[in-house]
Image 1 (cartoon, rainbow, N blue to C red):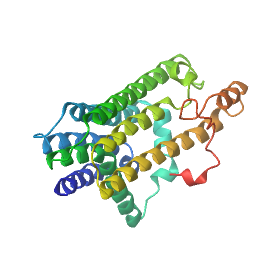
Image 2: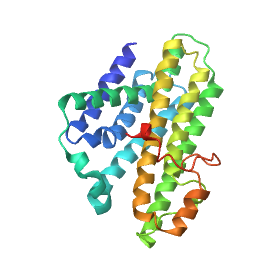
Image 3: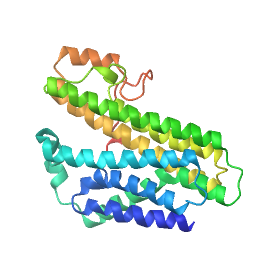
Amino acid sequence: MNYLLILLALSFAISAVGWIYFIYFFSIGYGFAISGLAVATAIIFRDVMTLPIAILCGVLFIYGIRLALYLLHRERKSPSYKKILYQPENTARKPVFAMFMIWISCALLYVGQMSPATFYLNNLAEGAAVSEPWAWAGAVVAAIGVVIEMVADAQKSAAKKINASRFVDTGLYRIVRCPNYFGEVLMWSGSFIICFGSCCSVGQWVIASLGYVGIVYVMFSGARRLELRQMEVYGNDPEFQAYIHRRPLILPFVPIYSVAKHTWLKG
């Protein structure tokens, strides 16, 4: 369990950037924490590192660094994003207790998300008969998820340069309305399925499952916020109304078209 304590301490240290501005707990703190945990995992378990887990750690490192730098750049260069980021409810001073609870929750969540790879390597080091095909499957799915997210972000940026006032319904957005969120769900699904070949204990399954369910919840919560913002901006546009009734919100071919009424997803 020492490795979990090390990762948790690192997660707390990196996500502490949220004390500068609490949104950073979930944004740049999240990105840098995931990349840091991926590097730490590779260092801690370097003697038993396998190729598929090394690839997964590399994928998560690239994902985390890219996300954090992308958000920092977006904050500096995008007036519309800055307006959303610094809206009054976000800039209002938060109680210290609430800040501590957010910090603790985020640090625990990020370790839970990273835990499948660490459990695989730890159990391998202890002599468990782990399954490498499951590790390969997880690494490949995670890599596909990151590629989808990167392509979706690039397509959205390109579309907005052409027409900043129109919603995006081209490229991957023809399939699903939040392909970037779908890519992230797919990435963490790839990470999670490694547990099936990791000879996990009950406690390890609980930690990994909480991390996975937690990040999926965060993705749907984020999609809900985006849906509500888009309804404010494009709600009177007949084309937009037709689009949102034809395209699922996050999961391709899964007929979930709206989560706006699900207040339990409010983050």
